[in-house]
Image (tube, rainbow, N blue to C red):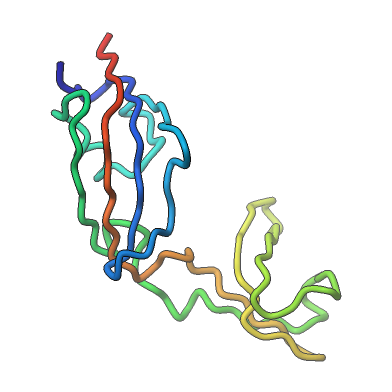
Length: 142
């Protein structure tokens, strides 16, 4: 049986950079998703379609296919009077900010001084080409 475009599929994955550094995985066990429900990137769904139980495949995603290019405009500098921050936060810390419309924005503090804080809102894997190593464990096409 092969994976269809609307299959419920159980698979293990590992994501690596070009230098073979592992940056993500499904952990010790596989995950289960239903294709067509936007649970994963569409290009990965497309790569899963047609695979068989037990099959392994490596998908190469350029940065624009994965998490986009690194955008310098996503680095924002705030005055302390414009933003509420925990005083213990420092450069390198992850931060979750909520805007006026109650949208969450995750970023990394790049710089913090007495007057300003500079935050990078790019996805941590932005600008990186990625290799997705996939192994299909189970397929339900019903």
